[in-house]
Length: 84
Image (tube, rainbow, N blue to C red):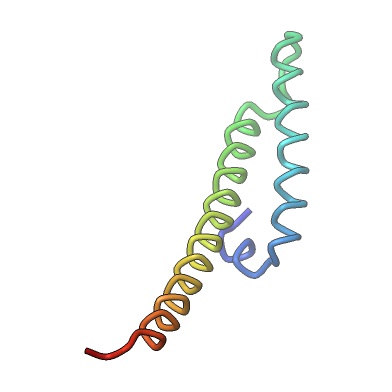
């Protein structure tokens, strides 16, 4: 998946997509463990990269929310302080 497509998705869609990709990766790894030749050798790598992209986006969004929450919280603390 392309990063542009992923950025347009909501968090719930990203999490659902992440779960689907993890199941797909598990199936591919099971095929390799059994000894069956995968349909496409690069498919495992593409799946892992897609998982990493989604996890990166989710982490960026959560850290951005924490940052904006911390800034708002800091402003409230500064307003509540008495001026010396």
